[in-house]
Each structure stands twice: as structure tokens, then as C-alpha cells.
Length: 262
Image (cartoon, rainbow, N blue to C red; front, side):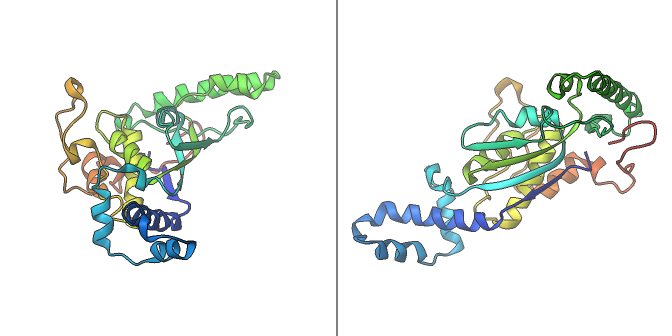
């Protein structure tokens, strides 16, 4: 999991989304003052304070946070993460590396589940993944199409995923997917994305984090019983919940001569 990387591809869009949020909120109250395009542009360009952004984020009007698209690339997460995160479809778009068009013969790279790291079970897990990919390669060699052969590919195989969403939907996904009821890989990826969004705009993304940080657990009887303190930042969550990914002594991830390493 340590090889998983995320990056905001258009950070300038965050400032634009913020500006549109403020403008949209002002528009609802000052429509009677706008009689021409110049009037609107004056409203659009009117300066505002950081406290204005923080206050607007707290309002129960999510539409004003839906103007603007933030594009993020996730490199190295597993296809299991792909299957989980793509359940979010409202105002979210995805583009993934395709098993239908790509030939992964000889390109074996797998995510080691967090709970297997340092347990001595990694080798057996990687052996199973490699066996699945050998079956994949054999099918390709026999002339089976890439799409059909792709059914042999294990969920642990690494992937590249583009995610495009509004600020509001990013916050919704982060709140839901950083909950400890999710798989650790999904949590880790979403905490890393939250970390970068906070670096770009702390006020706009101040209310992210799992639901338990902003009210209470929504899992009912399925609660983990371990709420995340509201003062914790993404870096704190990674340090506390993913210590294996913070240790310098963690085995370097890469592909070995015999097996594929994480």
C-alpha cells in the first residue's frame, strides 16, 4: 500500500469552485440588484474573507458547493478499491485502466492488504496472485481476447484511476470512505486525498473526515465503537491507524525476481 499515490490534477479549480460558491450564495440574496451582465460580474469579482467561506460551508445548502470539478488521479491502488469507490455515481465520473484494451501479460504488481503486511503471509498471498496472472497470460497466448482473460486478474492487481467530482461529492465520499468500517486500503486512499484537498483549501474542506468526527456514527449496530477525535488531521489518522506505512523499516515495495512484491 505504500506505493499508492494520489494527486489533484487541477488544483486551480478549487479556488474557482470556492469563488463560485460565494458568488452563488450572494446571488440568492442580491438578485434584485442585478439588471445587466456588468452587475453580475461585479458581484462575481467582489472580494470576500476566509471566514465567509468557512461560514458558507456550514450552511445546509449543498448546491452552492457543486459549482466546479476537481480531478484526482489514484496510481497503484487495487482493483478492489476501484470496485468500491465506483459505487459513488452522483456527480462523480471515473476513467480506469481497462482490462479490455490493455494486455497485462508480464506486468504483475499487486497491493498487499494492510493486515498482511509484516505477518509473514505476504509470500503466500503474492504466490496466489501470480498464479492467477499466469492463467491470464496463458489465455492471452492461446488467443483469448483481453476482456475474457481479464476475468482471471486478481482484485489485488494495481490500477490507475481518474476521479472527477464536485467539492460537495468529494466531501461526501471522504466522510463515508474514511470511516473505519471500510477496507483499510480504501480508507488510506481517501485520507490521502483529503490531506491534499486540505492543503489546497482548509476552509472549504474543513468539514471532511468520517461522520463520527462531525456529529456521530451513522453505522448503527455496525459501528466500530472507535470514533475519530474531531481535532485529528489526515496526517494524524495515517500515523495512528496506519503505522506500518509510516515506519522507515517497512520493506521496500517492488517486484522481486520470483514473486511480485507490494
